[in-house]
Length: 105
Image 1 (tube, rainbow, N blue to C red):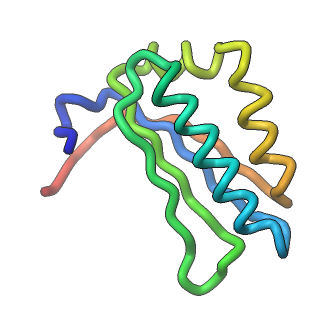
Image 2: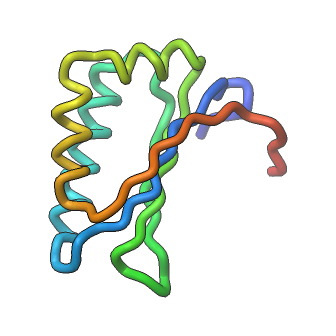
């Protein structure tokens, strides 16, 4: 389990998956983030959650040690292809980057 001191940046995705592609999306996202864990220095953890009222809507959040680590991950040659494999199953994707402000535990 990480603490707030382990996390200096967050990556996030808001994913609207095409009908019938939900399971494939989950598999591709897992593959993408397992690659990230193995290849990207500064990766802390990632989660994918699904909307209980809309099975095609997912949110992802990645935790990173620093903003620089997140930027380096996005700049890796394999990043675009791995992210693209997830995006091609979606109708809409919104990616964002965040910094921590407050944590209540």
